[in-house]
Image (cartoon, rainbow, N blue to C red; front, top):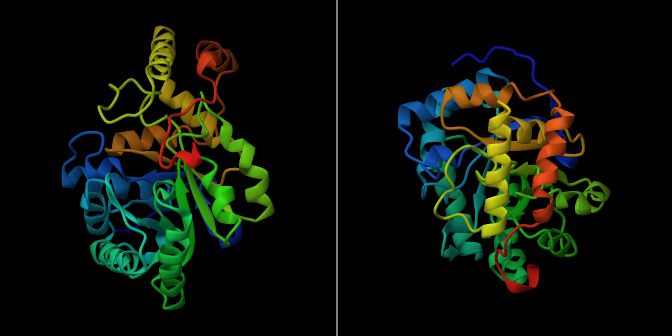
Length: 316
């Protein structure tokens, strides 16, 4: 497919020097995480993202248990490799299967590359490292990725997770090119800012994911698998309804807010249709209405910077 030039804002992703679109496409939804999506619709969604100037896509074998990677691979078939940057993940394969051993990570990477058909990953992410002891991540998974970088299967290495403590912990032991933090820079939780000085000092690229708190800050029903506590869910729903009464879509406010931070290179937002992609793109370069923002913050103040426990106890 031909990808036309369109206006999109771009920022440099840390020491990688990749110029990534400030809005990236999170591909978990294309694996059916938030509801059924046909293969044809998923492919059109990826193509629309590229046409709208989005050049960074992120997926994982966990999303839809390889469905997301498979459909992204089909969508990218025939697209020039210089039109996009792609990340996928290693180490977590089902919700109860985290394996960062050298052998499993190396094999999992090869399996991902086969599904994606892209030749190499721009960034390989150690996925949700809070679930296993740090030494397993470093001695197994990181070593496998270093070898993969040496033989050209990947270009850069990152790590992802929810508890912010994991990032100083791993950066105390090794170098990373990028991190993915999710649900920590949103309308209700800006705790990601507390580790930005460390990341900037180390020139680590910052990728913000789940700017809508895994769907809580949208009009959609709360997913059954969501782990947020009842108070956070209730306050987010109250804020959604408050915005609705004013004719405002809180999802647009939340995405505008996240995209506006110049210290964050890119924010991954999921989309399951071309229409959702275009709605997200319209948020680029726009600032939230100050009065609406103040109203949302007043409602959600009791749950300010509250997340939920995730992974090993020492990280929560």
